[in-house]
Length: 638
Image 1 (cartoon, rainbow, N blue to C red):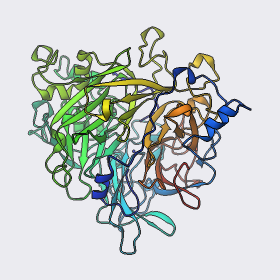
Image 2: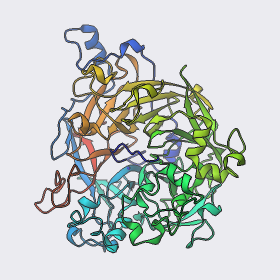
Image 3: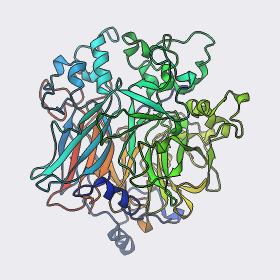
Image 4: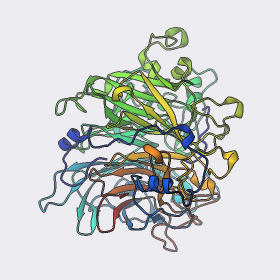
């Protein structure tokens, strides 16, 4: 989830003694409701709370968050609210096994990186295991590694780039993408990785995996190395993701266009499809060294990316599976929730300006202990794209071959074609073009879901719509979806804007917050979100630095007189964004991912904007996962 505008043709559950089976039983009940709709007039553009007003004081006291708000700021390190601590858990290059090479940034290699924690951590998932023999809580941390920052990772590449990118650098970047599964345990000193755990695993951009679902084996997925169209090497640009009710790890492939070089021959049948996905983006030099990343040599290779990958973390020897039924686009995430009838629903945003919000509804119900990874529950179902109507209704439009314009006359000869070109199918159905839809998180206890819309500086004032009312939209907004009767599988929903982000003290920004929001409580560019153990909404940002302050994590009220009130909890070092907030079920642990620290205009390995978290004179900045706890124990946020 790069903070760029991302225009082309265009990193949970449970701590303690909970096991996977307990997680399944709790999934529908663990999150309490924070819904409710305050009158629109209560949301006013005000930067500070009124003073001396007993009514407002009473409203503030009734809020669901109880912590001293962090001040806005921007410097070389991270900060957390008073009364909390944020400790390093995993850094880029940290070992996963006893034989993992020590981190040596001056002598990096693909072989070393394959045995180490990857780069630019994003999504974080947590699946509990049975306690250790001494009763210590333990679980599996699942972390995406979205992309590599070549200029910050490797010495000596900036001057003379791209010629300075050697084959070994390209292969090291391939190894640094993907994800990490690592066992962690909570001891006397807090959570720590278990080096050498049999569960530990790296998933990389060259890890062998199977293609499943309606597009598997289709001629448009066949390549020289895989004439079957069913076996692909790797996953990459994994942004957010999800943890399924049966305890598997979903990795969402996002900006896959950037990994390709080359040019298609004039009139190639994939030309329009590639253009719609922004292929080739040319962000990396892999195609100079690995033929499959050069579209002039392998024009179908990009069609094998842009999917959701499911990983069976209980079996480190299992091959991940790309679930093509969930569509192909720039997946921000794939959080799942159960409908009342037991069907699995995955909400997904396509992280691109003027693209769409989706949800997938499985054909079959989830049956604990019976259905899940091995019986390919996510291979059958209906993919929908959202149309946000002016009257506050939301129509979920099915992307089904043969229905409406999705026919051979429009180039869709099968459901595989619909899924390979999901974006074009959404175009023809009349879906609502959104302002960079990123994370979408459902609250099972409320029947509501929250859509993070990061920004859209390219939207013109005469091209707004009710769901995207500002043009340009520099600071983003958040939409709340209400599913009728809590039925997440419904084809018709309600929606409204929860907050319009930005500084409410600047009238021309058009921000809308609750008046109780302080000068520290507003934010810009919402990206990821999380629902904690008490059902409260937390929002992380990517682009808040455009307001002069660091990105970070904010608590956001969603109910009652404080609905639309933000409160600042954590901020990242300069150059970084915050990703993947993940709470344990007891609410006492929060994992967060600090991505691309030290980045900025002109930043390089030799001259980063910060050397966080090690701060050695020769230390490069290292993307890292932190674990946040309350001093003295207790739930995060009060």
